[in-house]
Image: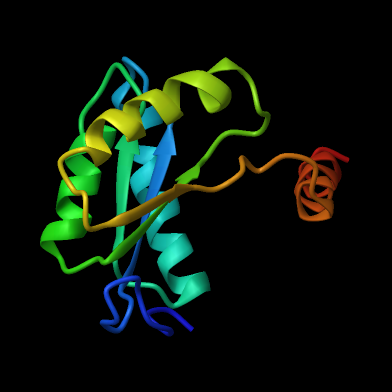
Length: 133
């Protein structure tokens, strides 16, 4: 489960998760990520979860990484709340994470794949279709 296993330093690993979306000029769009984070915490049982917007709004990815480390994370997984592996996933987020990670040389920081092609997404879309029938 969360926090299981040893980190590279031999300490018990404490895994932080940064959920990152694109970011918007619209507050309601940005607020959705905070709501999703609460849903994710309940579903995963994880408590060391922070949110970040890639651009246009705070908190930033560096801010969220800093909060995870301050809360005791020895390992951080940056989990993109993006559907497909476009430019932001392939270039922008890795660049931002790599730059921010220089501040935390003892912390293992990885980037998870985007949501992508997943049968669960197909179920969600079908549920949205059925809602309109």
